[in-house]
Length: 283
Ligand code: GLN
Image (cartoon, rainbow, N blue to C red; front, side, top):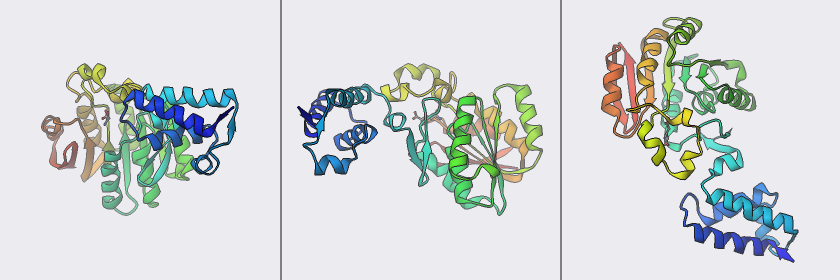
């Protein structure tokens, strides 16, 4: 008869053989156990709990899936961002810790009753975290993927911010869709635009770590130089922002100067706040 302890030992052997450093063994085991209905406390208090063969094999095959590079966040279905739990799925980029820089800046700097847009919103983590922490604000959350927008909608409902979120589908690289978006939002109407667009260079897509390769190419591939989206983001921002309004973007490592040039050419002043994070102000 197999027990929880046997399963833990078998997972440990798998973990060590895989030589993965995505997560610690404790985090790995807790995830596999809790997803299969055994909270970590139960394992520590009752390690001799009996498992059926199916239960035991299920734990091990989940362990293999994760060690094979399947992202922990997709496996658990959630990721924390700005102190909030977001639902995530294979249709969206997993929110990254560093991207919180954008939300935090907007939370601190949006004027009272501020209105803003989040272009390429994915799970909605940027816009919804701002709406959640700033109850006086209103957001447009925009993405090309209807699956991403469904998830944004679900997250907005869960966080009870739906009434202040206008969730819109738009391919921002398509000029007629972009024009429509601008006229729907309105000219000179927003206080800020936020964006973490796809910015991985196409040639790098094949070289990404196994876990990142499981994320949608649509959310990662920023074209040949990784900067395909910034011109359009700046074009939209120039129209929808009030004078003095700001645009805060994330970009690829080392792409700061190129992105600065692209956006500045659209009549913005620029300030590199951190590596990969640039704040632009509409002149
Ligand atoms: N930061 C992500 C990564 O490192 C990429 C996100 C993006 O393309 N916007 O994989």
